[in-house]
Image (cartoon, rainbow, N blue to C red; front, side, top):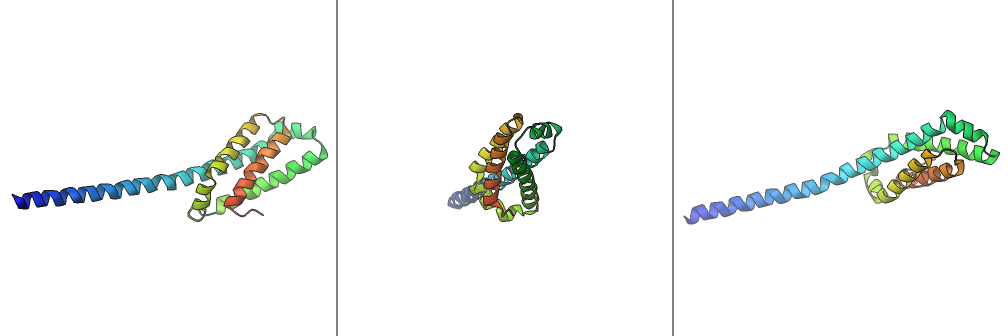
Length: 144
């Protein structure tokens, strides 16, 4: 009987250890998923911002802008394209830590650019939102 109890204790200990390992593995899994989701959201926001700047509506509004605003828009479009290419070419495994560290800022900047896209008439507001997003992306990957 003592042998059966010892075996039961060892089995229970093995199950507990296996469960603890699974909990640790499960705790680590969301971090990788979270980084990949932040990466996807950021890249999506950059791409959508660039696409918004290529629409007819944007160009109609841009025609009424000052020459300085038009130059700023051109610089922002180039910067967005650079950020998209740089982030697309980056290995997630190499930038995952920086993505996690900047997650809150990236989420806030992504939401800001999405809100600004709703009203393209506000060129300055859109350019400011794009600049904030680019600044945070610059913390994750080196932008030219």
